[in-house]
Amino acid sequence: MGVKGRRKRDLQDEPTLLKDVQSIIDNAIEKGFVKDYEVDIERIVENEGIILEKDFEMESSKSGSLSKDKKQDKWVIKVNGKHHVKRQRFTIAHEFAHYCLHKDEQGSFVDEEIYFRKDHESSIEYNADVFASEILMPKVLFDKAIKEDNIKKIKELSDKFNVSTMAITIRAEKLGFKTKSHEK
Image (cartoon, rainbow, N blue to C red; front, side, top):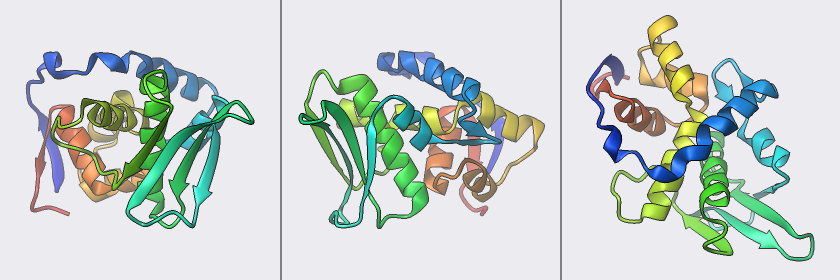
């Protein structure tokens, strides 16, 4: 899979709840939470006062959860410690998205099999996926990687951003880049 060119993008498809993403990215850059292309999602989460726990006892079908610890009066993100680090990073960003976007609507979230959802079956989950991808792969860095540093292979982008190849492919397409499915 490779990334090549740009196609027109319909901005009307953008979820309206993503207003805070750019300020989070700007703050992360200012605080040094972005090194090269990798956004340190763990430091962003902890900087917000959220407790982050890797749970090695979590069922493998579960990716993570967000809940309010009433004793400590703090939010807690738990991520499946048995999953690959790239998947853990997306899960942490996804749960952080629930915190930013939906914590006032629900007291807790448990997510099973978090993969970027292509459909709009659940707008809450879809918006959390989009938010997570925008945090982990900011447009400005994605454009820089492709246009300035000439990184065209999905695998290379995946390694640079420390996310899965599927997340890179979906983000590239969402940003209007064409991908080739036969290249690795």
